[in-house]
Image 1 (cartoon, rainbow, N blue to C red):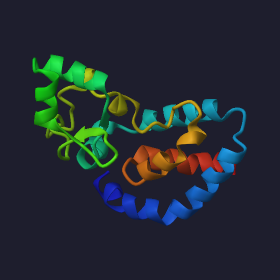
Image 2 (cartoon, helix red, strand yellow):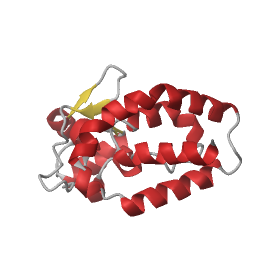
Image 3 (cartoon, rainbow, N blue to C red):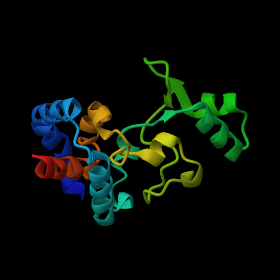
Image 4 (cartoon, rainbow, N blue to C red):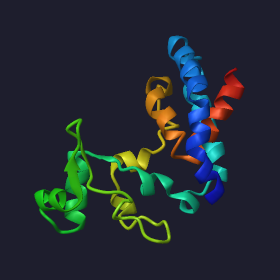
Length: 163
């Protein structure tokens, strides 16, 4: 896994043009069965992929925090929402709440998340490869292929199956 992760950003960069072209076609004319195909590809990939071996998403990127995420996590830590924000979050250039730093402060050395049951919605849904109307999130998917080995594999398999 370590070796694959080292090569992943370069592999994703090499496929970026091809992926943009593929997703452009997909957006124009998505197959009727796209959502169910994506669900199948997602389930197949995650039956082989153990996120605890990797945790690259937690090590290299941070999720967006919704107000509900802030409320849930601040309650978990018995903090006021404002104190939670001051301690862990910052407002980014898009005016979104994000982590002050990466790797995620809730990630343990064993790749376990210390707030797993309370984790942000963006973490629960990552890498978003089983989302409905998948063709509408191509930009984030292409970005995720450089971070998540599973997302990379899912997109490659999707291109094989859909041509």
